Length: 458
Ligand code: PMP
Ligand code: GLN
Image 1 (cartoon, rainbow, N blue to C red):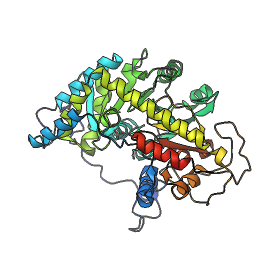
Image 2 (cartoon, rainbow, N blue to C red):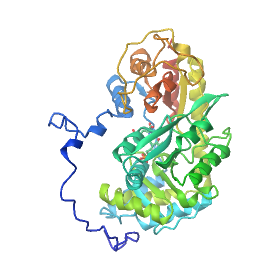
Image 3 (cartoon, rainbow, N blue to C red):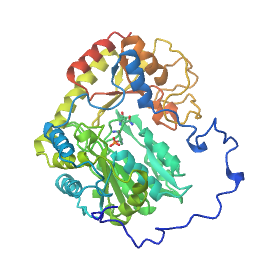
Image 4 (tube, protein in one colour):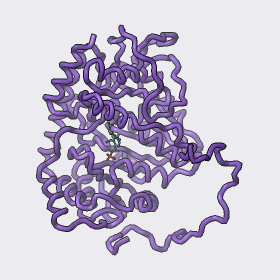
């Protein structure tokens, strides 16, 4: 740690904790611990992430990649120049563990400016290696083995893995399309809370559905968190991507009455400034919660992306026109792709935020697709029973119905486009069996070419 680290509590009693005499008894260990099966048992159900699989498929086949959500254009030129200047100017050593003061100050100013949320740069803000590390470190810091984490499925793929790494158990609440929009059953949410509930992990705007949780939904989540004394962890990486036809603006859960004191709010620069490869993220919340996350985070990466932190600090201070333009541009791309997908015959589901559109492939179900195992990082041991899809169509017994995984694996060969099957983001794959996701954060000419290719599908 450097002298600039303000958050570390040097009096912490466990600072030099001695190791236990002996580890757990061999009876608790999985049977197969041979070098041929070196991976810890709890991670064995997780495969390669679906994003890596689908991006590799795009690279192999030369297909247009509308799978993994990354822009094919750069962020603000001044931000890029700042980063180059920082590298050339010698800012290439470890920044302070909690993050560069200039970035923590910028994150604080951004929170006040857009959301009226006031976090102290020293102690209430921690810079992380993307939102991914913020979320993983928070789960590792806050969950005891056996604690339960409520999250809305389909969920972003790192959630399941990070919850599992923490020894915790996920409790999914399913988003289904009802009355033309993704909704959850308030009864299922209330029933998910129990004595072992530690955290609610909420992603809004939501990947992959594009759902923006409204005030009523957030109010229910907030009241259940307070009733059951549960911590909220919010993933707000798409906070600046809410479109003008959304039923609600983005509302950080921490702004609801009684929630600031029990909410950790994670976000990152990747989406807002079109620099997903930089992995500059942060997490904000009351000092005890942020301090707990720092205690874990310092041993994961300690710190990252030194010269990029000042550049992101600069970008966070961009004028309002930058943020308005970002969202207007993306809304145009969403509409462009939605029109093309509808023309191609897909049922396009509403998306009011994020980089993504989901579609139901049922109308293109006349064909049969090669059967394959499950893809992606979700637990492949899960059964894939026929059930009821989000549009309310009864799939029971319909074996020939197209499956999103098979559909996506066949798509590059059929028309030279890559998409992502959303069923891999569900614990209940039947709920997402016919849904696939397209990313629209691509140049217009790339979207147009993809639309042209998709229109060849019959
Ligand atoms: N959360 C969600 C919902 C995402 O879609 C992503 C992917 N950008 C992340 C977290 C990861 O963010 P980062 O790249 O900042 O780690
Ligand atoms: N967030 C990106 C997406 O949903 C992927 C990030 C990743 O590849 N882990 O497409």
